[in-house]
Structures are given as C-alpha cells and as structure tokens.
Image 1 (tube, helix red, strand yellow):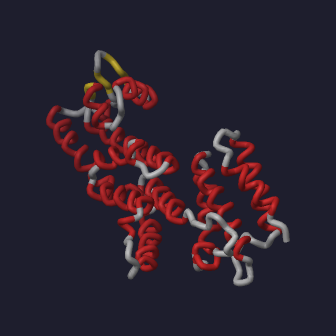
Image 2 (tube, rainbow, N blue to C red):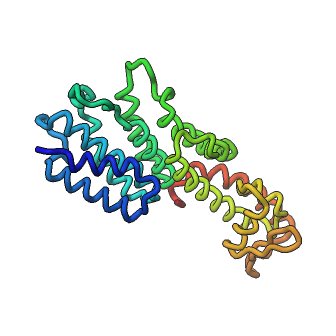
Image 3 (cartoon, rainbow, N blue to C red):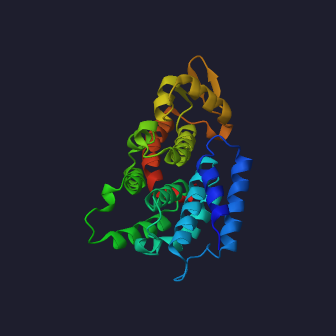
Length: 277
C-alpha cells in the first residue's frame, strides 16, 4: 500500500511555518485520513516499520504544530494518540531505508508535562513522571539529563517552593528548551500573575507602579499600566489604586496584617494552584 500521499503531506507540514492556521489544520486532517486508510493510526505487531515510522512522525508533527497554533486540546489528543507508538520498541521502527528514524517523544512528553502544570493538574503530572522514572531506571542517562523533561520538573519544584522569581527567569526566551515550550510557559506565568494580582487587591489600597512591576513579573511600567487597565484598576500619579467597596475599607492595622498575608498566600498558591486554575 502506497505511503506517498502521507509522505507528501508530512513534507508540507514540516515546512509550513509560514502557512496559515487554516491550511495547517487542513493538512493535518488530510494526513490523519491517509493514516486511517493505511490502518496506521494504531500500531500493531504486523504494521511495517516504514509505516510505523511515518505514522509516528506525522502525529508528532501534528502535536508540535498544535502548540504553535495555541491549541492545547488538539495537542493533548495527539499526545494520547502517540502513547501506543511510544510503547513500541525503537527497533521496530528501523527498516534500513530511513535516513532519520529518531523520535521526538522527549519533547512531546515534556510539553505535555508543562501543559499539566498550567492546568494545575499535579496528580496527572506526577503519574506521568513516575512512569518515565520507572522506564528510565537502570539506564545510563537519567531524566535530569533530558532538557525537555527536566524543564517542567524544575518548574514544578520551584512552584512548590514558591520560588516564582526562578520560574520567571526560566520562562524567558533564553531559558526555554525550544520555541514550543515558550507558549505554555507564558500561560503558566500568566496564571501566577493573576493570583498575585488578586492577593494584592485584597491586601493593599494602592501600590507604586515600580513596585507592582516587580511583584507581577512584568518587563516595564508600561506593561503594568496595561495590566492594571485590563483589571479595571485606577492608575494615577505613579500609583495603582485597587477598587474597594465600603465593606472592604480597613484600618491601618488591618492593612498591615493583610499585606503580610500576601506573602503567605503567594507561597501557599504554589501548593493550591490546581484549585484556582
């Protein structure tokens, strides 16, 4: 059975960085239909090596393109479709005619772990990680030596510690292991920023813009103003004023107590992220 149609579509997908999202989505749909015709969407013991490899490459390409299109649900579906292929021994993909039979499993799995962090799904995060650790046991290179897996693992540990400055630093362009990781990293920082903003509203009547820039991990005072306006805060004379109802008016002593609570809440957020995402 000919695989030329899938191969042609895969080549187009792998060079589609400048294509429209509509065209990429259409090509991905066509590729999956061709795999269905080849009976290659699920690997079997009788699936030829070259078809196994082509199917895995197509699904991995679809997963990575879904990230670039900012379609996390589509990415999750591709990840789930890839799991049976990742259970197939690597030797089954070797046909002797393929120039590149390497898998992108590490990158795809690392991205899935990062997606779970953005959703606050720590239970599934650790389930996936434990499975990887069992699989890696006894091998020369541990998970810490894998840049794609170690990245979300480090972020999760820093979140648990409340070390948001380290999380922020790691999500900078030079700190992410590949372009795709930057998409989910920005989502994660946005979630943390929103929670810190919520705590600040409850703790302070106002804040200097320069202080808010550091507190909210924003790059400039202009970004602070934009963020404040989006939240409905009042920006005046270099300060941000948080809206307070009559019931929220507090004494100076209460404000000081609440200010201290911001730190406690922010650290506690790392352990309760899944309940508020």
